[in-house]
Length: 375
Image (cartoon, rainbow, N blue to C red; front, side, top):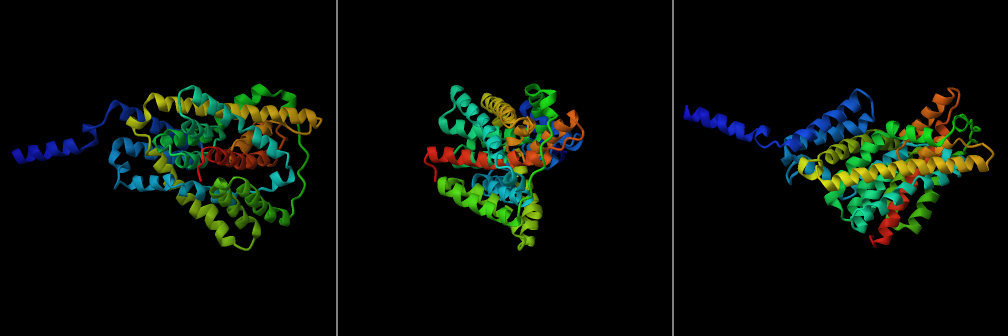
């Protein structure tokens, strides 16, 4: 009997129930909500499912993120900025830069959306974060998860990388919920109904030269952006050159999805109750939301100004796509425009600012690194 009771006692002590705190239960509930949003509501399941499952695992079995645990090694690839750079290559291989080339004015809308980053930076300083932590937090405003992880790693802010990454990816996933109210608040029915002229055809030569020229120009000005911009443009060159179809297919499919699994689960696994349920995390999540809202608003407001200056040729809704969430933000611009007029097709027009936003966020990250002397 003693043997049996000791065995049962050891099993009970080794179970997760013996060490689970109220905080762990809260985080498990949050993970289940994320899974519900991803599976039942379809909110970016490719991001939310692995993030939520990583969150679930670490709050049941914390050792999975300790040295020797499976997700510890996944997370090291985040810290070394390997996974974010590979994500950018996959995005480049999947994305048509033609709308941006056809309408270079889209760069202005992509730049305007970065306003949220600087608003969050000064807000974080005001909340007591040091300058490097404030810079890492502020990039959430670009709605760009890989860049947020990349910059936090480069600035040595691995202690807050988890909340930053989760906030960034969560807001990316919730673009269809967060952006429309802001877009509708800042535009009139008439502005949302504006139909834009069809974009001019873009030649194959232009599409091939674009990633090469952007890589040279941006990397010469801000060499620290080379890992992100370089991989983004390399992936796009795979796509547009037409001579490495196998590489383009691998980068945009198999490799991309492998990286998403590794990155998503490791990011989710940084959200243990001890690391996540504190005042610092709440501040980071709040600042990220403020930054994202400011970035969306700035893009729409510049779109309104450009609409006036062009005599009503630009629909302000495409300005909201200047955040880096590709292609979700562009789809939201299309959706809100179609709600006003079902015959209005804004998707390709919105892809220009959307791609510009990806480049813009990477440039802002490189600027922060240059300011702080990171090489």
